[in-house]
Image (cartoon, rainbow, N blue to C red; front, side):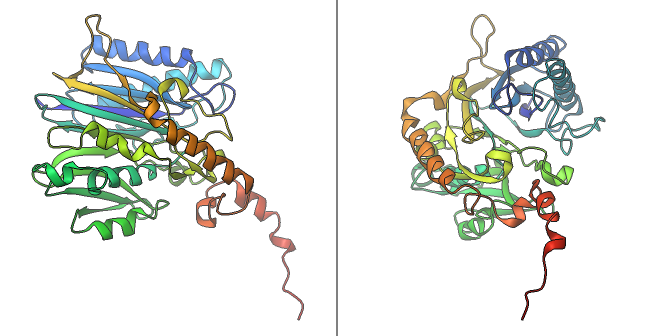
Length: 373
């Protein structure tokens, strides 16, 4: 029987602005998912936060896009949003863009990444979650992990990886996908995914046997709502070891910070800061954008747990090895904020189209005149 790993996230309310998810909302989610384990709907779960996003990590045998599992997540988010409303938390239910569940959370606001696979003898999975940024924030990381031999030695010396990987890329504007194979189509892949505003990596497979290697959320809230309602705050699942990149190769791109779109009001470039779970709160200019990474073992359809039934979770980016990236992120943040609202610190016109800036500019339209000759 194949195991499915699902992570679904949503911003349902935050303490003191867009900072972090307080404990009462996490408890709502833990109770709901615990009940789902008791009824056999899911096999195991772990609830955590990435900044102001509530993250539901689940394993089950229902397959991808399961209506039952997605409904569980939707109802959990709704219950947490109701709790947030009673506490008058900020942005209660922000990512829940519809009142009606239609069999799947895709298109309703929450972000989702899922992978279904036959378990190996040992199946490590890295769970990434980011806040204050967009889905294409994973483009750079996934390219480095699965296509750059300077980052991933396995592409050179592991016979299962030497044939490369296939990347599914979504065009968020046209809602179409294309699959490109590396290494032979690496340049074409870069031509697309370097345009992060439009193109994003949604899945990666191992070319040798088309085995799923990674899955990333692609929800763009502004395209669903037609206006700015918050950043997309993506999630991503990556399988590790034994024919896939090693754990250390998956994390190596985060040795240095890099710039992503989002940050304050979803309108600025900001440095992605790798942090441990305890530091997953966004403060400085609503940031800097954060990324957390959890290491889990999938065993017999469940997240491997201790004798008390508690899931074994490795808080990977809490390691001091990423201190340099954190300092780089702060240095980059300092430089960018000196520029205020001048590009390139602020996003370009096409990206700003879905923010509140057009409302400000519209007031000035009637005052524009043809220059006198």
